[in-house]
Image (cartoon, rainbow, N blue to C red; front, side, top):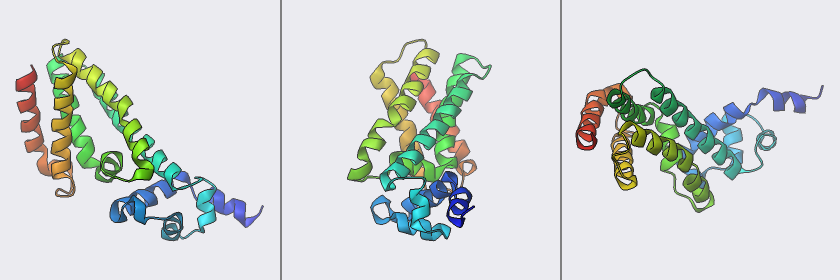
Length: 189
């Protein structure tokens, strides 16, 4: 077996995505090249092209993976055996917890601005937001309008982005997050 095939097998998509995520957050999407990602991993840039045809495809893979993680968390929380109000509280708090536990993921999902990837960022949240909106709507007994659900989402997003990079982990602000969620629930219940 050739060493080229061995290198391709040894270097995984996950390894590439982890290195790329860190570099995109540290330097910004536009300032990272496929060569830099390969150098960070100690591989040739050709090895990366075996897995991803270009930087935009790599970025899109990150966005899809990260939104999938958030969707999975929201769906898990929705399936918990709680009353509607407690379940809604768990979902709102779970959103904040996700953002502050997976800070680099959250930045990739929502905060990187670049013309080349803008369409990826704009398209990917729709499915996740739809799951969020349908769940909130159902758990509130259909009392909230689309605009009100959007306001709840923006409030959660604002909380996460405010504390992003200022806290090490969710536990650092968990009491504040709980108070924020209780405030929101008081206004939507």
